[in-house]
Image 1 (spheres, rainbow, N blue to C red):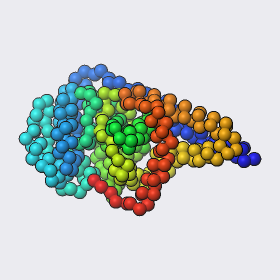
Image 2 (image 1 turned 90 degrees about the vertical axis):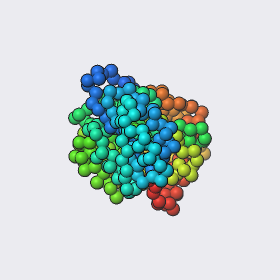
Image 3 (image 1 turned 120 degrees about the horizontal axis):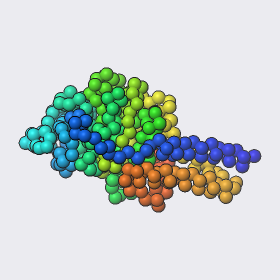
Image 4 (image 1 turned 180 degrees about the horizontal axis):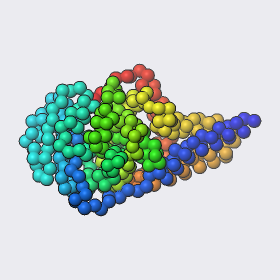
Amino acid sequence: MLFVILSSVLLLFLLIQVAFYILPAIGVKKKTVVEVYDSDLPPVSVIIACRNELQNLKSNIQYIINQQYPKFEVVIVDDNSTDGTSEYFSNLEDTPPCSIKIVENDGHGKKSALSCGIRAAAYENLIFTDADCYPASEKWILGMMSHFDEANPLVVGYGELSGKTFAARFSSYDAALIAMQYMGFASLGHAYMAVGRNMAYSRKLWDILGGFSSHSDMASGDDDLFVMTAAKHIRPAVCLSPEAKTISPAKDSFTKLLRQKSRHVSTSEKYSLLDKFLSGGEIVTRTLFYAVAIAMLFVNWKIALAFVGVRLIIAMFSLAWFCRSAKNEFNLFMSLIFDIFAPIFYFTLLVYRIFNRETEW
């Protein structure tokens, strides 16, 4: 009787896990840069909101200035920095082939800074990234805009994380898996998330949705909550072109990663039940799957290992395919370790959230 119960529960969790891997993999198709004529390309404002990130901006601004795109500007919103950001970039304004506009904000947080940048932008079409990010190629803007549609003016891009420490490599694995799922489900018609370091939309859409007013009480959510709101009215496009991704450093320690993840999950209280399931269901059912598999080891270890083996094959194949499509590094050995380690990390995050509710910019 115990064998039947454990087998049935394992099968249920396995089927849910398969859905979280196979469906997104089917949904996400490899996107390449579309060849279009210059006359078809509208001007674009690239918006970067920052606070005390002068060194990051110095390192990454050239990647943006060198974009192969007919007409664009860079809007840097200095949110009350004390490191000389405004002074430094004021001397770089009107740098060919694009202009750099400095906008000073009053230090009321990222959403306020982004709103300030959107209002100051010269052009209708907007692309967003972060100060610590750089485009993977000179065709980043072109790649994102090639998926832009006036009827559905929102493009969800991919933001790769990189690093050498164990924490950074886990963060990179985790970001790739999450991206595969939210981009995959968006391709299937249900968008619930994006990353602020690589997304694009029109100012008209932002105005129609009331900006960030529906979640202005939260420090985070300028990306995922905005996409959820927009998805009720339009169908966002997905851009997985390797040339159109951004790359940024992952947190190099688990303390920093816990703080970052805590801030990200703080927006989940605004999610619908379906969106909560899509965003958190994979890790929850993976944890339960492993727990039941461990119990099954004491009843029939061969069946337990068979279930685990099937799940790992599906999970690793799907993630490897996604990483290959995005030209993201995939290490099978480390991914297997991270697959088992992730439930431990997220349980730690749950405990961390109970005792730490602080937010940061």
